[in-house]
Image 1 (spheres, rainbow, N blue to C red):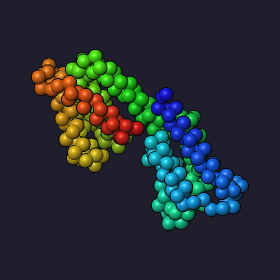
Image 2 (cartoon, rainbow, N blue to C red):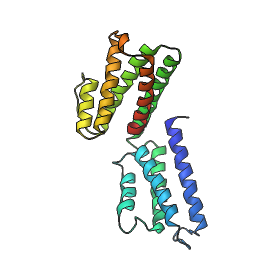
Image 3 (spheres, helix red, strand yellow):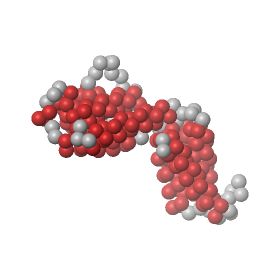
Image 4 (cartoon, rainbow, N blue to C red):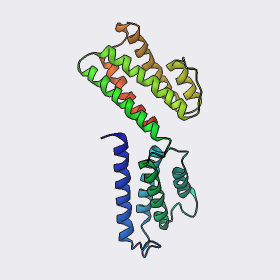
Length: 221
């Protein structure tokens, strides 16, 4: 299943859950005959915020409206705004299906990165951990470039993981612990690329690939 298919599946699941709650509360298209529970409203709205942030981006109108619903005093805990929330979900799904969202490119890029990660995992399974380290390092560098692009950070065409890492940490995209881990992974990549095979082991590359898969999912997923 592709990333786009998984996102659409989540949209469908969210809409189905929302419709079930609306039906149970007697929604007639204009008003509820029985107010939905606050728990149902908060659960569905939280799912919607998470999905739309990932699918549409934090700069989208869809995410902005859900954020307003979440923070505005009138709508933050008023479950009658459930229908409004589901309306935003429907609009976001419509735009996503038709490829009208800029962040769809990020999803496609993330899917391509996922393919490279699978190649690195297969290399590890066959005990080719040195080329796996080089490939994972290339994915790491490309991920950092995409993070810079996503957050409006400029960088020269010829740059390094260390430079990108420093800029992203300085901008607060992630914390010092993540920066330190990326520095260590960059060392593994450099050692693999320069034939210093005694500087790292297969287990190091396994950890590198596992961590990098989580990192790309958290920051580009």
